Length: 113
Image (cartoon, rainbow, N blue to C red; front, side, top):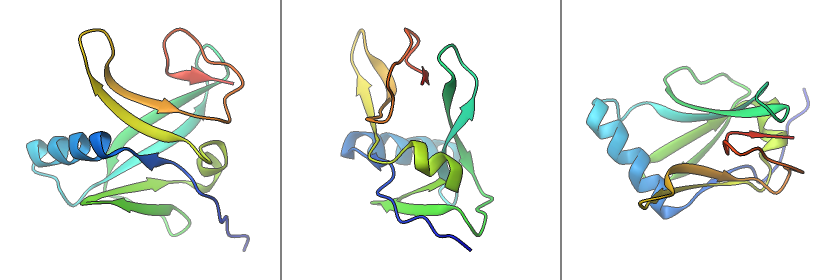
């Protein structure tokens, strides 16, 4: 079995705090944040993030404070070196992934190639 040893996605402190707040609001602090890359979107790949209680044996798991992040092996390759941030401004509110592997992104910010 091939094991990936990548520095996959990291969470900024702001993102980790926001994810923790969302988990607490849902009463689901035992869940992990799953970050995945799926085929599709206007540029070839799109990001997917959701809370997940099912962690597969080949998932990579990282912990940021009280927040667990899980990534499947295929997505981990595309998220190597990426970071997840949260902004709470008037124009740029929400989560954003900064991915050095993306050669181009689209206007929606959720798709890349």
